[in-house]
Amino acid sequence: MAEAAVIQSYIDLRDSECEARVAKAKAALGAQVVILGHHYQREEVFRFTDYAGDSLKLSRQAAVSEAKYIVFCGVHFMAEVADILSRPEQIAILPDMAAGCAMADMADLAKVERAWRELGQILEPEEKVTPVTYINSAANLKAFCGRHGGIVCTSSNAEAVLNWAFERREKVLFFPDQHLGRNTAYRMGIPLEKMAVWNFNRPNGGLTQEQIQEARIILWQGFCSVHQMFQPEHIDRFLARYPDAKVISHPENSFEVCQKSHYVGSTEYIIKTIREAESGTRWLVGTELNLVNRLHERYKNEGKSIHFMSPTVCMCSTMFRIDPQHLAWSLENLLSGQVVNQIKVPEDEAELARLALSRMLEVSP
Ligand code: 13P
Ligand code: SF4
Image 1 (cartoon, helix red, strand yellow):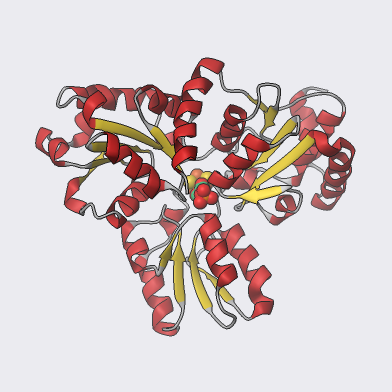
Image 2: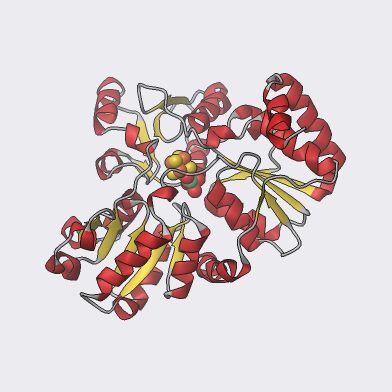
C-alpha cells in the first residue's frame, strides 16, 4: 500500500482503538523510544508522553535522553531542536509533518538576511546588533544567529537571553514574535519609544533611518494567531465579575493583555504558579485551550477555579495535528523496523544552530 493509503487506514481508526495500539507499541519498543510532549497536546496524546514540558524543558530533555528514537508530540521546530541537541545516532520523529507553527513561518531566512543587509546600510550590524531568535523558528534561523554572534530564547528565559545580548551589542533584532520581544524588553526597563517594529514585507522594515538608529530593540512583526485571540476586554469583564481573581498569561499575548495580567510566563511557569496557588483561588488563563482544560481538570478537586480567557474556543490547530492515529502509525512503523517522518537538520546548519542553542542553555536559569 502507498504511504498515503497506509496513513488513511490509521486515520479511519477510532481514537480508542488507536490508543490501545499506541500503548502496545510503546510497551514493545520499551527503552528504545522516548515520547516528549508539549503542554498544548490534546489529552489523548498527552497521556502517552514520558516527559511533558515547555520548549526549554523539552529541549533539555531531548539533550539528555538515551533512547534511540525521540518521538516528538509537538510542532516541527521542537522536533528540529531535539534532532540538533541529541546524539548523531538518535532519531527525532514528528508523527505528523503538517504540525508546524504559523508564527515560526512568519520569519524565513531570505527575509531575515534581507533585514540584516538593510540594517547594514544604516549601521554596522555585526558590531551593533545581536540577532535573537525565539525557539519558535526554523533551524536555519537558529543557524543564522549562531553565525552572527546571536542566540536563541524561549518564553521562560527571554529576559536572561536579552541581558546576554545587550551585554555584547547595543541593539537586538528579535524575531519572529514581536510580543515576546516587547513584553520582555519592557519588563527589563526599555521604554516602548525605544522599540521599533520591523514590517518584513516592506523595504527597511518600513522604518526610517532615524527610527532604526533610535531603537534598542527591533521587533519582527510576527505573532501567534492563538494568543492573538485574547483581548484586554476579556480580562476587564472577568475582573469586574470576580475582583479577587488572578490573571495569568503567556508572553506571546499582546502588550495590553500582559500589562493587565498579574502574572506572565511560559507554559511551565503557568502550571507551576497554579499548582502552588492556594485552594479557593480563581484564575483566568491566557494560553492554549488544551493546557487550560487540563489545569481545570487537575485542580478542580483542590478548590481552584480555572477559566479560559477567550469566550470563543481557540486551540493551536497545528499542535492538534498530532493525534493517536499518527502516533500509532509512527510507533508501529518503528516496531517493524521502519522510520517514518524523521526530522533531520543538515549537519552544517545544525552545527551553527547548536552554537546559538548552547549559548541559550548556558544563560538559562
Ligand atoms: P512554551 O515554551 O511556553 O511552552 O511556549 C511554546 C509555544 O509555542 C507557546 O505558544
Ligand atoms: Fe506556534 Fe502559536 Fe501554536 Fe505556539 S500556539 S505552536 S506559537 S501557533
